[in-house]
Length: 221
Image 1 (cartoon, one colour):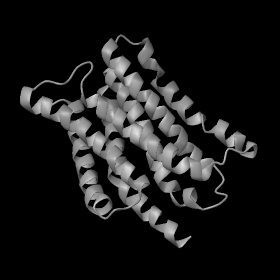
Image 2 (cartoon, rainbow, N blue to C red):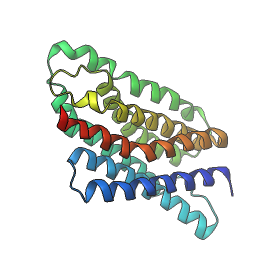
Image 3 (cartoon, rainbow, N blue to C red):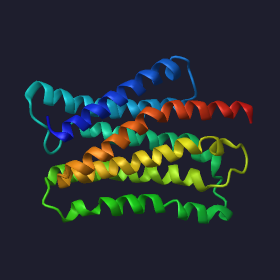
């Protein structure tokens, strides 16, 4: 078994554990929409890895170029983006000019991630895989912007983003690890792929329990 496939199996198991936890403790107990969307994000990542693992176990081959599993990665960060932009940001940022510097500083995160990813454009990797990974990177980078924004933005009214800063840190690490994985995948660097994958699996495992613990503080503010 190749190191890349072992990495995908580890991520798949981590996401399955996290998704089961999320469905049992969050979706069934009817928690808020924000945390439910994070559960669905992890579920999308799980579906992505299940698709890759099943292909390997049934055919003994790895998926090359574009495949449906990559849509799961896009779905994951689309849900993370939607939860922060659609549910959280309107409560945090009233659009006033005094916070313009924080909005501008928040673009540091996507710029850094896209810079890390940029070597794929100078490689001889699969064009179709590069294209779909780049599409995924766009959603990832924008999602990272809001996670970073909610780390640095002043918590002026409700205290809601102060409570979930731990979650936002883990989500940013997930964005970084996924960026490194996609870059390593295109560049065929097994070691970076494995290390980033282990970090990614750990993030998927701890995100939901951490977020649930932090969201519980909202009711005590």
